[in-house]
Image 1 (cartoon, rainbow, N blue to C red):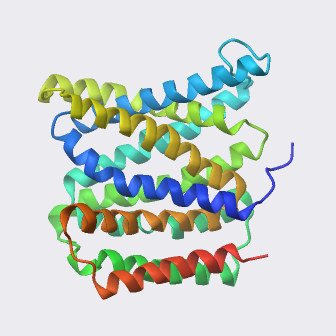
Image 2: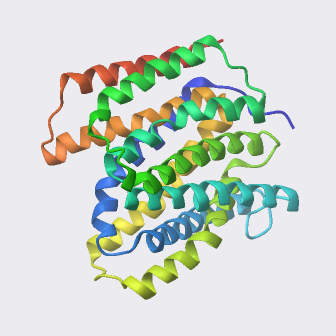
Length: 303
């Protein structure tokens, strides 16, 4: 079956919306993580995300006379999607949690901002996408914009943070690989909605045992209505919806183009920090936003 047709605007909007949701989820995550340990929370996110997508799949299946569960993937498609999920939601997000714990937030923002640049070699190797001058220019311009937004001078590269920084690099590498694999799997005719649900399942074999270990050693705080609302937001909005939109972008755009929408994440995070926390918006931030937008436009206008 041929790859999905390229349609820049819907794909770009999907990727930008996903990145915007993730940029705004840190405020919610910070509150919920004070009560629930990281891997236990990630497990609940993946489970809730899968459940939300499964309900949509089952409803769609009833309309299309598919099996009651709504899934129509064959064995090979299921295994491929599950393996991609292990990479993205088990290994990559696992590295991210470990890296954030052992390093600093500034280091995390800086290292993970390398993800779009890391997509290019994976897309070249796995998808045979050409490395064009326009794409390299777009990555360079947008990366300079991110550096202006997050200010790399605040990063700490001392030796005691080496393992944390290494984990963050692992997170960036594996998320880039995951994103390219999404395009490869969906390009083979696998239904995107069903694949996204199976991707989420793929992370659970890694997160469940780590989550159980955390709860047995650290315990859990009091679950209030606010915390419950935060869990639902993280599971349904920032996992089910945002992950589907991210995967949609990579299914419908060249990987090197879709990856640039990732740069909206720190931009939205900083804007929310200004709106809710009164953090300062600097001239560098405005310049960075302009450069990020310019990079996305340069790449999107490629023929």
